[in-house]
Image 1 (tube, rainbow, N blue to C red):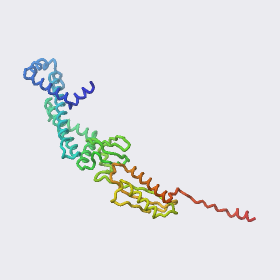
Image 2: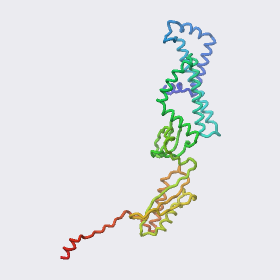
Image 3: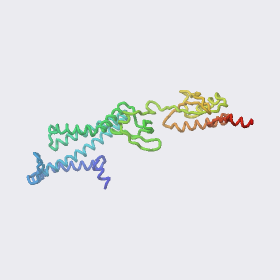
Image 4: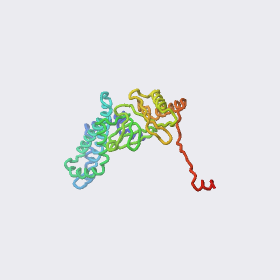
Amino acid sequence: MKNFWIKMIKPKGFTAKWLLLFVLGGIAYLWSQGHFAIAEKYLDTEQLTLTIGTYKITVYAALKALLSVVIIFWVTAIISDFSDKRIQAMKKMRVANKALFQKLAQILIYIVSFLVTLNILGIDLTSLTILSGAVGIGLGFGMQKIAANFVSGMILILERSLKIGDLIEMEDGTFGYVRKSSSRSTLIETIDGKEIIVPNEEFIIKQVVNWTLNNNKARITINFGVSYNCDIEKARDLAIEAAKDHKRCMKEPDVLCFLDNFGDSSVDFILYFWVKDVNDGLRNAKSEVMFSIWKKFKDNGIEIPFPQRDLNIKQPATIQVMNNA
């Protein structure tokens, strides 16, 4: 029963469309037979009239308005659904452009429906000028964020800086894929399966890293240190070899390994290599190369030291004098 009423409220299904045709057909038949005139005669009377200021509302007018609003709402929803399907069927249009045209079409359809509803209800649009101005000021303060998010969504679509499927990293550390974009917000699915709804304004006013904007490659950095007693040139060559042997390592740009620092306990290196597809993950590739480095170092006698400190104890002069005595 619940699903039935949902379908009636959002008439996009087959049943609701046939019901709408049935209602419209019934209204047309009753109108042609003059039954509306009979209903108006009994319902449009002084006894069944509610007076509000200069306005008089009869039961007939109220029922007519209610029926008109319901029918217009149904027709609007069906037209909106039809336009969405037509736009989605355009194979040559980009996904981002489809979303933009869908939003614009929905806005236009609902604005026209609203104006038609006001006209059917007999509301003079010129009398709404002052009221709309006051309401506009109130909404301007109360809906600033909503408007900002909507405009931001349009900017993102027009600039094509954010697309469905992009891998992004936000300023607060959120890292995941763009799964859905609407006029108000964007749905991000993180690597660990969380679904985060982010207002579109966040992508405009804050820094966002798009790992897949123009290409899918990414650079991985590995820091490691070896003992001062080791052959550091051999350690560098083994690290480069471990990276090049990995199946996802790109030939261009080349693998690079630099001596980075002379630490307290180790000679520190930094290794750079590029992978082909960031969507396949970065941590797994980094981990596999580090395992390979560890194995190569172990097989070739390259030691990775742990922090060490030398402690020198000097005897005080008084103790030396007593010992001499």
